[in-house]
Amino acid sequence: MTLITKDINKAIEFLNDDQLIAIPTETVYGLAGNIYSENTIKAIFNLKKRPLTNPLIVHIHSIDLLKEVADEVSDLAYHLAHAFWPGPLTLLLKKNKKIPNYVTANKETVAVRIPNHELTLELLSKLDYPLAAPSANPFGSISPTESAHVYNYFNPILPLILDGGTCKNGIESTIIGFENDKPIVYRLGSIPIELIVKEIGAVEIKNQATDNPDAPGMLSKHYAPKTNTLLTDDLNGMINKYEGKRIGVISFDQTIENHTIYCHQVLSQSGNLSEAAANLYAALHLLDTMKLDVIIAQKFPNHDLGRSINDRLLRATKK
Image 1: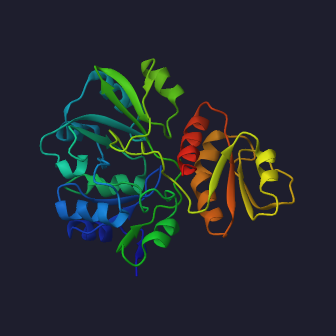
Image 2 (image 1 turned 135 degrees about the horizontal axis):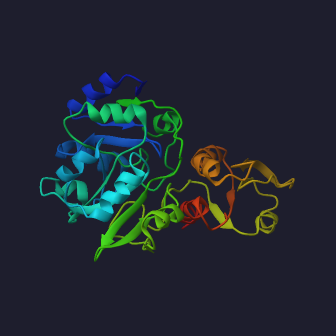
């Protein structure tokens, strides 16, 4: 049976024994292992059933360690790191030669970040190696924001979950790389584009779906419930189309009065996009357990974190 614990020393023991564990971050729980252990990294791909072409994110605990992971770190990259780390920003940089190809999917770049979670930062500071930590869920399914989500996916196969409570941001990190020294956003995430632009000026968004992604989270179908899920800007109209069906609804800040709704999840009664993002995956997990015919999600305002929420919902609704 999978052990759920807050004991960092127990987590270190498992990691040093080349075993996988789940770790909390401020975004989602990650399935973590030593980046220099080929067997452990292979176990991550195998357990998740993740394509080997999809690179992993390397987690470190200090900006000083960046030069050990990446060969070229521009002033702009350092500016972003100092502005947003620890936090939900992942930088895509030219990798140091000692970073194994099996971590980076044979690409010349490495994705790296410093998570903003006290427990995991302490864990990382006590290890002699960085951790690779993709989301702790089977590939393509809903990301976990609570230890119970991870347990439901992987008990009893995964030996240990380091329990850090509910993830405060609730969606994955924003990923930024550089092409010809220009910043490129490869994945929308927990840091809104508006905040990035405020720090460094205009950025290009290049998060198109691809089968050979430069960064995690770029595949067309991702973050998806097993239940058929639809995204609409006409919530009442879509609900009426499915009258007589067992319907689950996700909305931003308003309760929809419709007798056909079986379960309704309002992500933020106060209309707060950060709160809505934090609650998104938990709502999807809950609805996906209810044997619904369909989940109907409301399209969010397409700015700030609403843009990132829409990105997740759009990928969740792809066939």
